[in-house]
Each structure stands twice: as C-alpha cells, then as structure tokens.
Image (cartoon, rainbow over all chains, first blue to last red; front, top):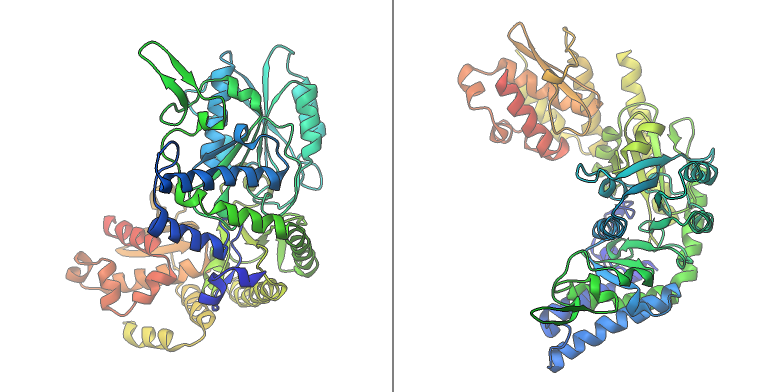
Amino acid sequence: MRDYFPFFKRRPDITYLDSAATSQTLYTVAEDQRDFMLDHKSNAHRSGNSMGTYVDQQYQSSKELIGKWLNINKPEKRIVFNSGTTQGLNDAAQMIVSAMEGGGVVFLGIDSHHSLILPWTQSGNTKWRVVYVELDKDGRLDLNDLSAKIKAEPMGVSKVIAATAVSNVLGLVNDLDGIKKIALECAAVSIIDASQIISKRQLNLSGFDFVVWSWHKVYGPMGLGCLLIDPVWLNFDPVRPGGGTVTSVSIDKVTWTDNATKFESGTQNLSAICALPKLVNWLIEHQTDIEAHDISLAKVINDQISLAQFTPTSKTDSGLLCLEPVVGTVEDYTMMLDAKNIMIRSGKLCAEPLITQISNGALLRLSWGCYTTKQEIELALDNLGDIHARLSKHVQRAV
Amino acid sequence: MLDFQNMFNELFELEDPLDKYEWIIEYGAIAKPVFTVAKSDANLVRGCTSNLWIEKIEDKIYCYGESLIVQGIASMICDWYNQASQRQQMDFSLNTLTNIGLAPLLSMGRQNGVANLIAKIKTL
C-alpha cells in the first residue's frame, strides 16, 4: 500500500503519524492535479469547448464514482462539492436555520470537533440552544443520554442531532445506526461528521440529512470536501447563491437547479475534483485491505502502549490514539519526537469540551493511514518510552 | 559571570537531538529561579503551546515554564538577557539569538513562542 504514496520515497527519513490531521497523497492525485494545471485547465459547466467538456466529464465521473463507493443512489442530487468539512458543516447549519426559522435545540456529541460545534454557537444564533450529549463508560456517544435528552424536549420543538462518526480524540466508532434510529423516531434533522472514518471503514450513510468529509484526509487533494445531503434539502434555497446554482435568471424570476449544484455556487476547486475519479476507483479497489489494516494497527497500539508511562484516553477502534503523559508536558514529547523526525500532533486537538473533560488540558495524538507500518507505530512507542525515561530523570531530580 | 559561548558550543556539539533537548532540560532545572514566579495572567507569555510565565524581580528576569524544554530554553534566554549590557538589552531581538549562536533554539523552541518571549521581556 505504501508504494502508492510518493511521499514515503521522497521523505524516507520521516515517520508520519499525523494522518488524522491530513493524510499523505495518493500518486494519482498528485499527477492528476499537476496535469490539470498544466494541460487541462478550463472551467466546468456549459463551456462549449472540448477542454471544458473534459472537465465536465471528470466532474460528473467524480460524483458517479463517489456514489458507487458509498452506495448512494442519484449522486448528482446528493453530493455537494465544497472547500471541506468546515464549509459543509456551516452550510448544513445555515440550511437548517433557514428552513426552521423558529429555532430549536441542537444535540451535540461532547466528542465533537470544534467545526461541528461552532456553527451553532455564534452570537447571532440566538434561536438555537445547544445540549451536549455525554459519552458512555467506553467513550462512545451515549445513546441512552441522547434519547433521554431529546425526548425531554416538547414535541413541537425543532431538533437537530449533530454527531461525529469517529472522534478525532478517541478514535472510537460511534453507533451510527443507533443515532439514525433516534433521529427518525424523534423527527430530528441529523448531521454526521465523517471526516475521521470515511477513509477507513465502509459505511452506510443513507438516512442522514447531512454527512460531511474532507478529501485531504482521504489521500486526496487539499481544499475539497463533500456535503452529502438528503434530496429533501433540494427543496430549499441555496445558502450561497451564485453561478451554477440556477437554470435561469430573468428580471422577475429565478429558477434554481434541481440537483446538488444548487449548493455549489461559483467556480469549484476543479483541479482537485479532476483528481477524484482515479482516487475513488483506488479506494473502491482497496477498501477491504484499508479497513483490515486500520483494525490491525489499532490492535498493535492498544496492545503495546505502556500504561505505566502514559494514560491512553481509551482503547482505540480506528485511526488514532491519544495519550496523556505521566511526566512532562505534551509539548516536551512533541518537540523531542520531532527531533527524531517522528511527526505527531498534540494540544487541545480542536475538541476542547472533550479534552477538558478527560484530561489536564492537552493530549498527544498518534494517528495513521493505510500506508503506516506496524514498525512505525512501534518506533514511535519506543521513542515515547525513551523520552518518558529522560524526562522522568529530570522531574525526579527537581522534586 | 556565565560563559555562554562555551555553554552553547557544548550544547550544539551534541549529536543526538534528544541529548540536546536533555541538556536544555538540565539547564532549566539547574537555573531554577531563586524567586517564585507568580503564575498570573500579567506574567503569562502569550502564544506558547504550554504555559510560560516571566517576572522581573529585583532587576532580574525569571521564568517558569510548564514544559521542561520550554523552561530550559526560556531560562537560557533570560540568563543571557540578565547579563547583557544596557545596549544589548535595548537591541535584543530574534536576530540577537542568531548573533550569539543560539539560532537553532528558534526551531527547537518554535519561533513564535520565542518571539513572544522576547517581546514580553522587553516590556518588563
């Protein structure tokens, strides 16, 4: 799998364990983006020339293949291209706020990334109240808590469930079917942040109102995301009207398009979109291996982390593990690992409500992709142990 | 009087980067302030990933960092500043660290944090 990623040939000195922040790039993506900029740069949608037609074909092919990959019918009516997860979550929130003018209650998982939380906490957004849903004893979203809190609200109040499929802190897979069931029972609008899981597991994403992800975490290009919508949302006006969202505009009438381009105003990130067909074909071809590899690395790290030296936030299911050091700060570990060319991430991980609840305010995060080897995980764990020993010596002396 | 040049030479001659960091940590531990730096908002150096406080006590600047490495780097910078001439203190900047042979600290200590530390020292 690693041979598909040029980064590891170009930078053999680096141990890259920050794939939850961004993944390394599949070779076809790097080639296709370069080819687009050098040979095919043209605009999509009704260009009337052969170069534009090529871009249109790549654009349509991208949506069809994403539909095949995720088992989604009528992808042209469901897949919205955007700049990434953050834009997708903001657009989803804005669509809901526009559609439900009276406001309501948003049930947010405490394990959410800030980008899922913040669209609902802006100062102008006074009609929507946020209720946090707690985690169960294993660290997964507590669906009993969600169910109890949502049922405690009066029937007539509009409800939104906003949850992450896999927390970027815990690496635990939440029960998406259970969330879907509660949303249906309580007539709640559902938003799923699939950023951390979509590159790793085969999912059933049908039945949710909105699902978002970014392609840069799926071995793809920067600056491109998808918002998967239930077709019912095509009945609402676009949140950002502009070129590409209409079929006709006259002095006294606007006719919006009846497919997902309604929510794709302006020129899209076409160099990124044109890199999707080969990427998605590759994902379809390797999905089973990708999933098996993720599960095997989770097992390696769960088995090998030394509880005496670090406190893991939980066991992990997928993609990442966070640790709290027993001595020293996360910054000490990150800097010393960096000196050994081991790239990890540390801090509040854009998930402060959860981090504050489960730690002293900052964590170390090791995260992997389909290209990560067992040896790299072991190297990082060995070095973490070495750093722990070095720091312990000085802490003991200082006491 | 501390012999900074010899100390820095000793530090940057170490080959293993973890040994370099350990040297810095050791420096920070030995240079532990004789005074307790108040962990107040007013003393906090903004922009550091972990908390770092500095305070001027009896004409000398002392620091306290939560991170052992940051404590070491900040102690070296404070110690140099405390021994510098008035003119050197006035001209103190990121460039000074390069001039006195401490440029590698900028990457080791993350440039923004060090820049904020220098800015804060100059306000005291």
